[in-house]
Image (cartoon, rainbow, N blue to C red; front, side, top):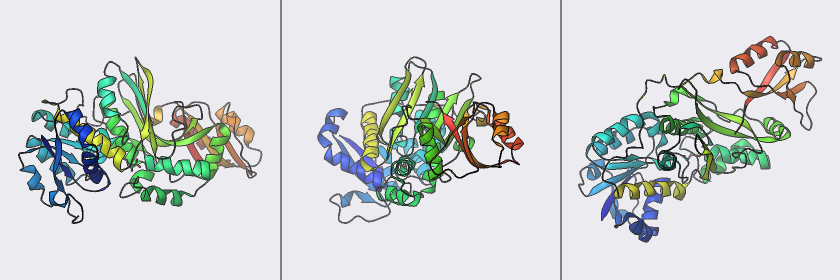
Amino acid sequence: MVKVAVLGHGTVGSGVVELFTKNAKSITSRAGQEMEVKKILDIREFPDLPYADKFTKDFNDILNDSEISIVAEVMGGLSPAFEFTKALLESGKSVVTSNKELVAAKGAELLAIAKEHNVNYFFEASVGGGIPIIRPMHQCLAANEITEVAGILNGTTNYILTKMFHESVPFDEALSEAQRLGYAERNPAADIEGHDACRKICILSSLAFGSHVYPQTVHTEGITKLTLVDVEYAASWGGVIKLIGRAKKQPDGKIIAAVYPAFLSSHSQLANIDDVFNGILIRGNATGDVVFYGRGAGKLPTASAVVADMIDISKSNCTSKSLTWKDSNADNVADYKSEALSFFICADLAEGAQKTVSDVFGEVEMLSRAGQPEGEIAFVTPAMSEYELEEKLGVLSNLMKVKSMIRVLDY
Ligand code: HSE
């Protein structure tokens, strides 16, 4: 019998307890022995639950319980989750988590502590909710050099963008619905400003490239500035707008890592990933592109990944050798502006200045939309670095007032 504990009885934590009851038989058969939730930490009271006797408000009840060998940290946030996780690993208990904020900020340190104490720190649920992505990356794709990772990593923003794109639902209304469905972070700014996707691309790129990519080194833009006009132009160009987190290894070994909304062709493997679904593309030098798709948020999808990690740990007797990366001093990330991309530009243009735009940018692809006001110009540039783009826009600054700039990605 393996006894486990759960830190936090929120959306994911209650899902973890539910799965241990609902799927007890298959969990026992896959773990090779029974698994039981012995204690649950939460500051709130849940007197009406059938397992009310398992709750404690004192973390030490779990830390000092020698029967508990695996703990799910599903509280979220940095503190006290970090202190609790560190203490548990140091006391010889394995920890699994859905807490992407903590893994993105402290992953290298916690993995090192787990190794020192011959236990595991697993975080399959931290990226892509119920989608298997962490384990496939370090196990099934282990024979590849991964060159690039890109994905729709945030369910809430994908839900909002889908509603805007297909139903013209206003932003606020779509966000409220995502909150009601339990997809959004406690502070939804983390979703709509791109920080949640940033944390997830930090975890994926650290694992893919072997050195910790810290959130503060990753250029991050959210979706709050996108308008239905941008959406219309994306459609007229033959594509969609998605919030993309991406990381790419350059020939010099440094990593281009960024999160921003991007135009994707409707032929892209990521273009039709809608609603709360996430899609993650891994480019390997043996496999080519592999795409993972599924529910990226929500109670049971995320709990599924947490419990799977616990089952996996119940069968192991040492620290995983492949789920690891080194710490870094943040010099592993390259300047994202140096990468050559095409850009969508929408601007108010002075009368008769269209030829000057073509002279400055070269061959641009002009776009149009229904009801386009006179004086509004929209086009996609040839590939250039962001420094070149800024220089060209500077030359045109007296003729053109830019309303939107969106990067065009080729996945
Ligand atoms: N708020 C996150 C999302 C939850 O919407 O994707 C899953 O990490």
